[in-house]
Amino acid sequence: MYKKISRQLIAVFLAAIFISIGLHEIRALSRYSLLNKTIVETSEFRSQPVAQEMTEFVQQQEEPGELLGIYWLETNFGQQRWRGNYSKEIFYSRKQKWCKKKEWQMYANACRAVWDDLKYFPVPEPEGRISAKVSFVDSWMYERNYGGKRGHEGCDIMAEKNIRGFYPVVSMTDGVVLHKGWLEQGGYRIGITAPGGAYFYYAHLDSYAGLNVGDTVKAGDLLGFMGDTGYSRIEGTTGNFPVHLHLGIYLTDTGEEISVNPYPVLKYLESRKLKCIYNE
Image (cartoon, rainbow, N blue to C red):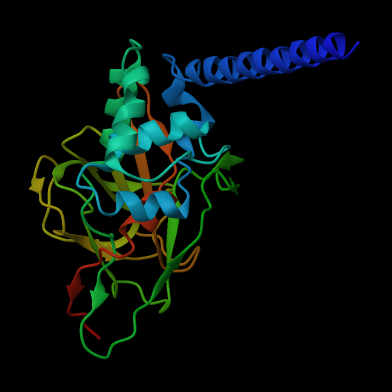
């Protein structure tokens, strides 16, 4: 009788192991299916979720894009916890299964385009005793109503001092000026295409530095000054909202503009602010 019970217990134990292994394989296959040709267009990718521990890790890396790409796949875009330590060795060991998929290069290039060219926070800190704080929250895809209901394709950096023309705005990356001039929603804006292909959009400016379309810029170069222009077809309109900088980041490799959430990028760059002299 004891032998019979023992065999039954062993059978139950083995069945539990096989079921556990099966569930693990199912979960692994489910994660593996994340990487497909439309992944860059998904809301999960576009929201760019990064936990604080991951932000601190990639701040120490020169090329964070690919590491973040692996992190998102392994955590199902932040819905699961990262397993193990944060080390380049662990990241690249886990890369091996993903890089075998044909979509890997496209996906990795998109991650690098957003992250690898980043150098500086777009609003410098003032030297001396001048107070010129800025703040920002994650408002990506919040509802906006001007011109009809739409999602907010960017992040607003708000000014402590509501003074147009006071806060300088610098390029976050190297790049080339692709667009400059008035837009109904964005007011005076300037758009920079970075070396990796991402498009960085700075809007509601009060005025520009001496740049023209086609000019090359270096990260940290002055683009203009923060303002409150826009929400009008009449060029030069101000006063429809407080002084702030609207930052947008777009990918265009698919043939259409795909906005990604700038908030994690700004958190990543928050400790990388240039110092400059503000004119009172």
